[in-house]
Length: 242
Image (cartoon, rainbow, N blue to C red):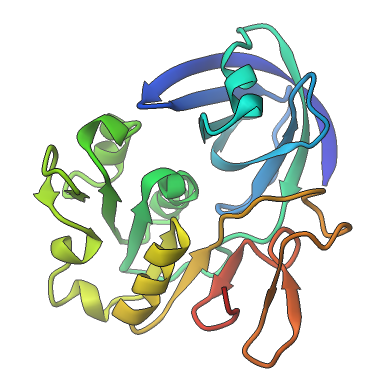
């Protein structure tokens, strides 16, 4: 974990209220899919945790959604400006099996895109199943299809792919595979009920982002506390209660 001043290369809108942020660290950053960074936005006390979409030759990419004043202020930052970034944080999808499903909802696709790129480099098979409210909510559609030309999509309004939820785009073989999942809590709970095994990345509000404030703890089935920022955000199915 280290703090680096990074230069903004790109900060563009890529879907409804969703922006792609690309930052130049000036050197290669060793990080795993599922890990995240914590950004200091000028004028705001608390850092904002963002999942890493890609790291390539010292350039890191992030997806973020405008949900409050902090992320709204971030949208106004321009190419050439700098941000103070703390990374890499947490534990990611370190155990990567072959022939698996990548199942995401909404902005939960961010760490899964990084995972898909890494698995492609490792020559491991994966199948993308993503769910959104509408087509206008889908970021980086061309990038997704370049990773998996047979990717399946579900949208609540039917504007892209199959009308419905993620279970509506699963076939019999899908339901037998290990799943790597990220998205809202109700979505993750449904994933645990649907697949025989898998891993999930929890999304939550964070204070420090590295385990000092204890503001993002969850219980294990045995009643012990785990920190999402430090022990996660990736956990195996049934490892924590949320």
